[in-house]
Amino acid sequence: MNANFTIPKFRLPSFVASLGHKLPQWPHTLALVAGLNATLKMKLLPESELALLEDKLFRVRINDTGGEASYTYRDGMFRPVFRPLREPDLAFAANLSAYLQLLARQEDPDTLFFNRELEITGDTELGLIVKNMLDAVEWPRLPRLPLTCH
Image (cartoon, rainbow, N blue to C red; front, top):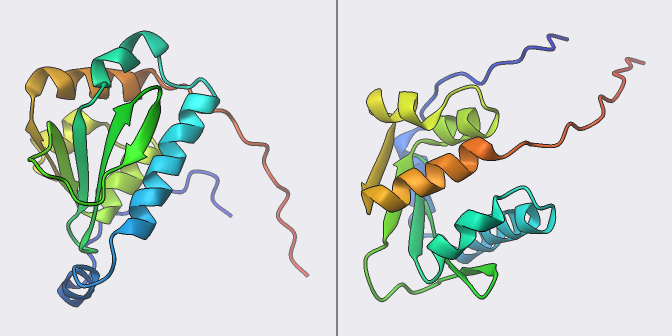
């Protein structure tokens, strides 16, 4: 198996997004918030910057799945926002492949943004703070599992 697996650029068929818009948005909102709070517990996010996120509203939209998650940071935790009453302070929109490439550190936000594969709207200064926080994360190395074929 190739150890240097790369995530290809792809776009899911448009019917996926049309179905996704009709589905409840809370499951992936909870999953995203749980993941963010796990990074807090693992002390992967720089604590000095977290205060700058207090009471800010964020939105992550996955264009080709129809999924959308809104959340805030308050009192030391990320919290879901199921019915936002205002526009987000910072919003991200991209296809699933772009987010996967970001998570795998295959692409950086700047490249995706300038290639028009990642849309970032809202407070520019807040966007730079979040980008720098994500760039500073040192993801823990997971042990490699031996692959066996039977």
